[in-house]
Image 1 (tube, rainbow, N blue to C red):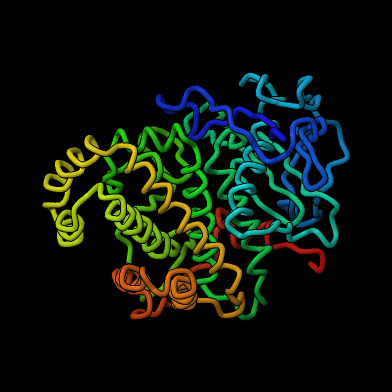
Image 2 (cartoon, rainbow, N blue to C red):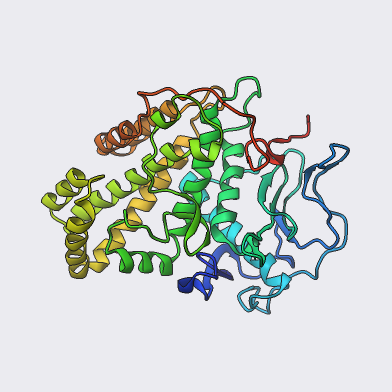
Length: 418
């Protein structure tokens, strides 16, 4: 049976290469979704008159939690075939459909990697997850029973996060981790747990974006497979052509935080960087399997990494190899994507939320690789974690209270007992 069609922007539409949305098909059978869109697990609304985001009010006098019982914009309606791809950008209905379609698309991807349905953290107390849009919110939150999308106003005009695939996928990543790993005891939580959360959310967004054919094709055309070039995939939650919140291809190491840390977003970067390097190494291994690059080229890439010679020498070699085997490069990248996605899902299911640190993640990942391949990728996994000082440097203490921009210290950590 055919799935339901939506129009999604693989990256923000204000970027020249992504001005037009891509039609994608989600797993929901055509005709199975209700207006909103909504289904048995989640529903989407665009509230009218909602004065504040969910959570504790600024003065501490009130707590707002879903469901929203006020007025809403008219719901997005499916067409006669049960699809939502007829909707055009510029209306509340397109925004709600884009938000729902993105969440369903990303859940399809990660439920495939997990090999089962991923529950919501709030399933015991809420019938469904509320996906809601609040333009006055200059942030985006994944909380207990909801995902709430605001927007960016830093350039003067509103850029809705409900149309930003990376932001939605990032917030959904937080929801997956709270469901699969859990919420730690506040008295035992570590800084590395907070950093892990942000890293996992970034990786959910990065891996998910590689499921857009248009983005994969553009990525390979622009880089010839040299993924260390700054590109669409390693710009996470991009806000403009030259500004991004975090970059997965970074050079951060745990030694940078030996004296302590302030923001969990920064603390996440060594872990995210290690996983991005693992993705690149897996890609190179798959290219070798397909005969698209030579062992000598792969070895030279490792030798020149992080040197000034890497870009001028390796880009020419990648240009030649990609021109000769573009189809093999795409297959290799998709293979690497799915290997890492599967490894991440298997790893996250085994982590203990109490006293979690980056070494735990590395150890579990190595065990996962042993089970899947007999340890084929052990060397590259160990090497990339070692390059980030993971297992060799301890993270220092938290130096300042978490700020208002913190996602760890936010409405998402509130559960009914609070």
